[in-house]
Each structure stands twice: as C-alpha cells, then as structure tokens.
Image (cartoon, rainbow, N blue to C red):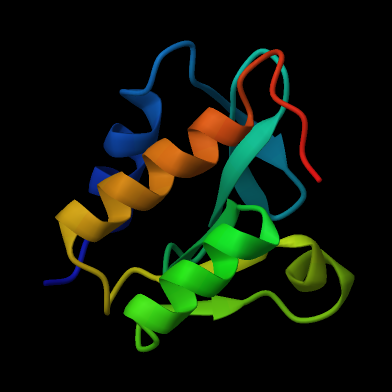
Length: 109
C-alpha cells in the first residue's frame, strides 16, 4: 500500500516535461510553467498543488492519505499526501491531475 519516496519521485518525473528543483526543505516537481508537487526532505509526505475541488475530492475519497495543507495554501487547494497511507494507483492519479493544472495555458481559479 505505501509508496516510498523514490517511487513517488519516479512517478512525478515520468509526467511530460516534469523536472525537479530544490524548494526550501523540500524537492519541487514542476512543469515549465509552475510547481505541481513537493516532496518532504524526510520523504514522508508529498504536497500536491490542487485546486479546491480536487483537494476536496481526494480528501473525501481517501481521508487517511490526503489532508488539506494547513493555512492559506490549503484553502487554495494544496493537499498533503501521506506516502505511508497511499497506494501507487491513487498517487499516480493525484500527480497526473496536479500536473495537468500546472500545464502551460491552464488557469487556476
């Protein structure tokens, strides 16, 4: 059931035009336009940059694995994924959707 950090990284970088870069104490995954996810240095969680609708969907469908990021980022849609509680299929779906929101030409609400 759990996804380790190395596998989460592979899944994120397998998306079209995805790259990684340092982001404070995390690793950011981004398209040429913007970030779509960040992985913690301790590798226990991945933050996905969703819109509020996707945040709500994943938090409702898998509440053990997904929670809103506290504060303003969470209100905008940022969602924490506990890698110890998510399966690979669900994480792959979440990464793809976050990646789609970060594509060039896509505007967030």
